Figure (tube, rainbow, N blue to C red):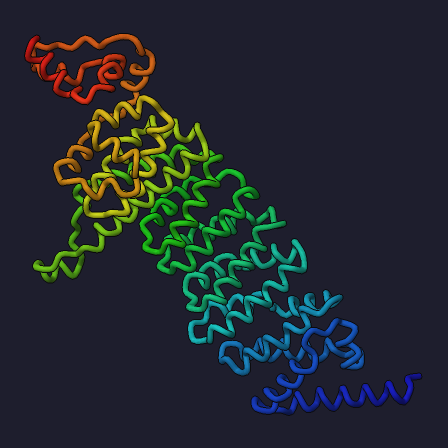
Amino acid sequence: MTSAKEQEAIRKLMVFLQEWDSAHKVARSHILNNFIRSNDGKTEPELELEFSQGASLFLARLTAWLRMTYMYSTCLNKLLKSIGIFLSAASGHRYIIEFLEIGGVLILLEILGLNHLKEEDKRESVKLLQLVANAGRKYKELICESYGVRSLANFLVTSSSAEAQEDVQVLLDSLGRGNPKYQKQVYKGLIAVLPCASPRAQQLALQTLVVMQDVVGEAPSILVEPVLSLLCSVHLEVQYEAIQLLKALMARQVRPALLKGLVALLTPPKEKALTVSDETTRDPTTLCLREPMLVDIQQAAAAKAIGILAKESADVAEELIQLKVVHGLMVAVGNLDHAASQRHASISLKYFVHTFPFVEESVKAVLGPTPFQRFMDSPETWYTKMDPVQAEELASNIVDNPRDMSRMQSTKGACRVTDLSRNSHNFTTSFCLPIHKIYGGFPRFEEDQNALVQNF
């Protein structure tokens, strides 16, 4: 037999449920307000005590109303918050199961794709999905099996709320951990976000990819192009995260392709220097400057990334040398249209000059003694005194043919034989390194060379 106190509690519960069942939209909104205010943060035992061991009866009514009205945004935010009180209740695992039994995950994911709903409603939906994912591996798998990764990635790209995007990032990161069956699906979903037009989404996707890299292991080749393309972003935070991902990928099999792509970005094709847009097609008198600007930004970011990667690994630096990175850096230094390219390329080039003696000799031969000394003294600013003729010389240099370099390293004490019958002035550039070092200490080195040519 139940006590009088228990009977009274049950009577109050029945009155409350009947009040909910007979209430219209406005009245139910007031009920939800009172419920949120009175029960936020309660545990499962506390909720059961509040509802006389009948909390599940009220949760069933909330989920039923959600299923019927979520497409019309009827008190949707309050309704989702109320359900969240049950799903977040300590020891309330059974509430999650009850919510999932009515198709709760599918409803939450569908809410994310409805364009007419408010951002705050969609954010609440993401929070509920996070509560479900936190319940364990099988719940993460359920979200992924319900095409959750695709829905979350789409919302990350289209959302205009920075807070909502951050919530999505946290959820995707959670789905990528402790979920071996679907972690690669999450990884590829993040890759699909990279070409989007939202800088914030790109930044968050890159951050999550970096974190997931150790979990996933080898990266797919489809990642190379999107990551390199982000180096043309005008948003420095996106460039920074792209470089962080490049650093994480240097231990993976995609490293050769990434390095080759980075070096290629230093020397963009000349035909891309000026591109005609759709507006230009309609108005031939208007030149579109957007494309060359992005090419220059990408060149500068590639030069910066190359310096960072080379400093972190001697093996990477040597691979870059074989890819003729010095030539590419000197081309970027000679880009008078973009000071950032010149600055980052100069800083990176100085590292290679310090690290590889044959690069130092080659760069010195191209620049000449005085400009080379200015470069070594202040790589951040020396290019400001460069004229167009010098820039053109840098762009046309061929200083780092890997075969020539290996020969220079293996023939330290030998002089190269030069055919003087074609052009006697070539003699001035055919001295081997020991002779250069002998004359290097004299202020009239160039005059001595010319005199030798004339006397010969």
